[in-house]
Image (cartoon, rainbow, N blue to C red; front, side):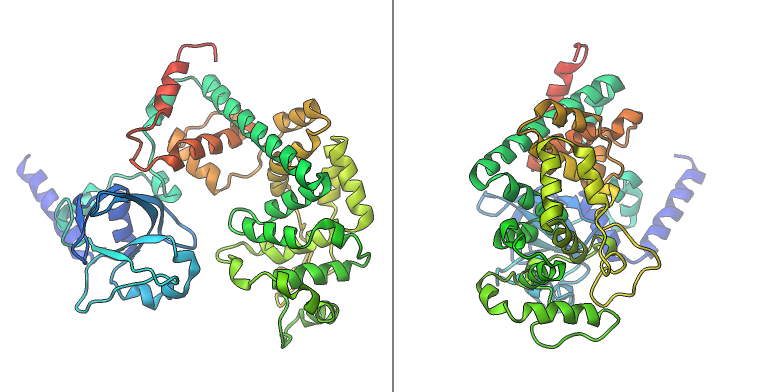
Length: 464
């Protein structure tokens, strides 16, 4: 190294050393595994990290799907939360938050002057690791060793070992591979729907499927519970929209128990409340606790309240009959038109009971939801009697928006590689998710034992 190069390197080290660590810095140290391994916890336990986890950029713990070997030689999996100091766990109220019950490791920059030992809401003790004294390189050089790409940091996942194997395949073969995975995924959805329909009937199976799809990933379980507590046959006995709406919002726990809120939407709340309080005692044992709903970071137009309104509209007897006939006959164009046409005097312009009205009406079920409904509910439902037609619908559909699961899978498997217009096909997008779930989410050793690269290698040069 020349004298000038040494001097530049010295200046870069001094600059890096002068910037105090913040939480984002510590998270990145963890993400890039720039720590000694094994690590020593503040409690004196030696642990070996197998995988730091996937970086969560939304609400909840900072890293999910992490894995470690504890001091007894056993593997543990769970989430990891990162702070600068141990006491931040209490300051951020994580000990009262059920979404942090899956945390198995609290990572901090340093232990601080006083001891603090965090617990989850279920009163489970958490082990803690202080990174400042267990770095793999000196702090002054640490920032110079960051190697993750902006794409990896934005998605929260590192590029997988399979990327090289997939890079060796032409776009056509990669697309065929992902489409095959998507077809497998759809077949599994179809079989699950058929089993559910056999047990519960087609209409209740459609109802539960719709409810789950309305909840996205965060509130799928809550919506499923609501669909089970309020089967569609119960709602169909109520001809008035406000009666069905009052039942759905009441059982879901979105109506106040005592005092009505003030605000621009109090009038609509009052109408529903007056219908709900008369029958609340009957439904008391089936009420969902408000704690089951995860409302963090949800876009206003995707709020559960708007999805509940859509279910209230859809369970109108005439509308529901029209909808079910469309699914049974695989007339999915009619079904799509029915869903897109759902309009509510209040909820088409509001996101919550006390929100301001929007200037224009917003669809309760927009086009971005159609692809998910088609693949997970409507296609499997139509396939009961018209399998070829359902497969054709799914095969021709495209996914208009890339969600978090698609984005993570694209980075992990393809490193952001673009496969042309065919990549937007629904089967390809679902195939990406299927591979990601089958291999990436079941891997707790940073790709080392993964069999997917070998599978891709077998495809190379074949007619697949």
